[in-house]
Length: 383
Image (cartoon, rainbow, N blue to C red; front, side, top):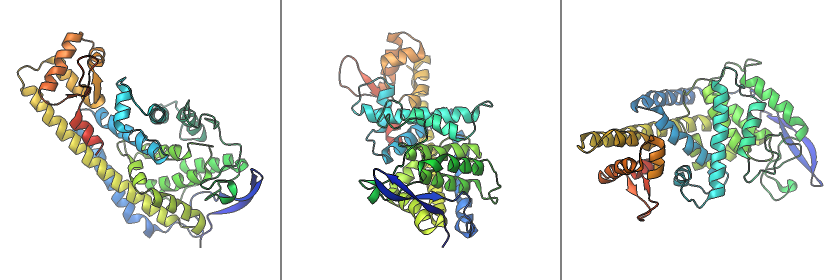
């Protein structure tokens, strides 16, 4: 059986525990078995290439990104127990009253952290994927929400544990705090190709890095979300997906028990192969799901646009409002007025036309302070 790490005695809360210290990547003695990933990697890369291709079906890739990034933010947060829904998120952006304020704030923080990482990767002078960049993202993730007292933006300085009520009955004890910085430096070297990681395919390297990050568990809180954000960042870093159109957290949430079990088996049984297979299957499934979603959105928007163009009462304001709908599926007339920089009566008339055509629906049932929804589009996203 392959050894994937060593144990170090650590004392926390007065208890002595065996903390796991992973070996640097890639797996050795033996090296990762190519038959465990070659075909699955080919299928997953093909699925990502097809997803990149269909994004050209819609006039604006921003429409697809708006929903994909929010779904990933929502699903990665739901894995950690938040109760917010996609509609809550749309309502919050529309300035409407929402119930799950704290949960929505956590999802919004994830979006901010995600944008920070993406902006750095796309800026010639930005930070590369590094401990510093992940720490900056972590600071945004925990800003003002649950976990705000857990040293946002700082690597942990104390022993943590996963599962169980105390260190002694924990499911897993990550490496002692004094090992964290060195382990992350090794992981950074692996990402940036020093030493050369045996020509492993990029998706396989992403699987290895995600598992390594979760094992190191370098922060006191938010490790799962930062670890999954790292997957999206590496897909861009290794040019596997030009835009973050895939929400892998949906697959991981659906198979949550298996997700944690496969990660655990790396440490307990030295089984890197099963984890890599699971990860590659997840990428292929998530990319295929995202591709179907893009086609469905493209079909819906094209059909609705055609109806609008054929209506004799439609004009510039209603066309411009329609083009905004995929970026603000819940809205008020006042928001339309601000976004389009038109008068309130013109905004009201544009909304009324889309309502008459059955595209948007008023959701409050009130005469004043009314808010509207693009229900067929929201239904596709929440399916």
